[in-house]
Image 1: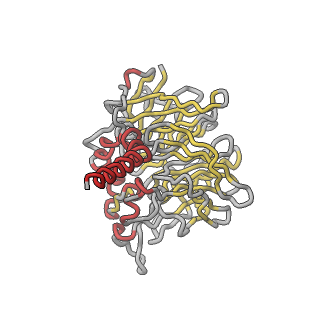
Image 2: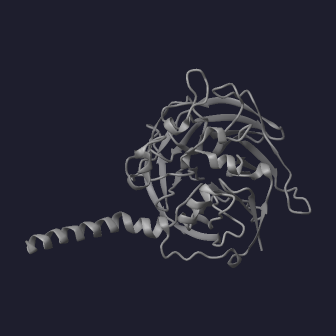
Image 3: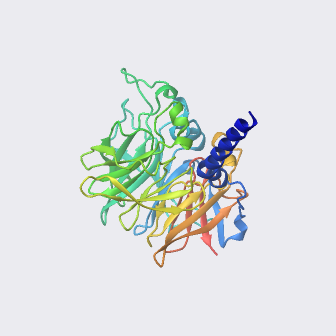
Length: 402
């Protein structure tokens, strides 16, 4: 009997050791951050300030037009995002922002004496949602430059679900009715023109988009389903994927089963044409190439960052900028009480150095003095300035290099 107990114990010990090495160790050290040293913002050569305005709340994603010197921000209102944010299972339709989210344009070379930038929201023309309204529920977005005066915005639109009578229904049971919206914008104008809507069964839990050119795109589903138990197990079992959509809006799963993605977040197309997919669970950036014949993705590289990640933004030099989540437990508190609890934020620059990947921590705010739960960072190569957005923060952050 003792021999049997010993044998069983040995098997369990080996099993536990295997589970620890393959999964638990990564969860504790990377995802949760056990033993992680988090630095204070004063240790870095930047002076940071908040841009506080009701229309600059909950700006999930940013894109910088280096030529026109305009920063675009997808904003939705902090408490409205708190109630309606399908990616984190917040599905209160009645809590959506009246009038919807806005795409804000900030003139970054025209700051006033207080350092505040003039801005305006882009109006829309030609777009109506499922109930005949014009509201957009914005999160991630990307841009395709058509020519020197024209750009196309590719927007993730987290529309609420409707019934056969075109009335809003309880989203907690069926999830969002998400689409991808494409708008044309001519620089200098105040309105963007709706071109088309992509609605597909492959649009499950869209997080962000990478425009590939010629109307084609890829986007990340950060979960395997809109609602349900399997979705809740995705951080453990995996289940997110990358979808390719052609210029004819034909969409299919493009990412291979290996690696098994767990909360793939704000992907981006690099200057090398590759697709870079950050992971919010395992702290890695997965690198893919698009197969020209099948439009499927080949996994060609993995960049180890070692911290949960959010949206990637590529600057004019080709470097990738990505926010990290150094304290996931505090971050979880912030998602439920964004006006009361601030959580630390980290900003990384990822680029090539003599052919090797170099991951550099550029800025970290361990006490959340200025930044809280950063989800995107745009780097202005001309000035060295950083613009930081956050899905739930009631402000934008601007950091000037000393």
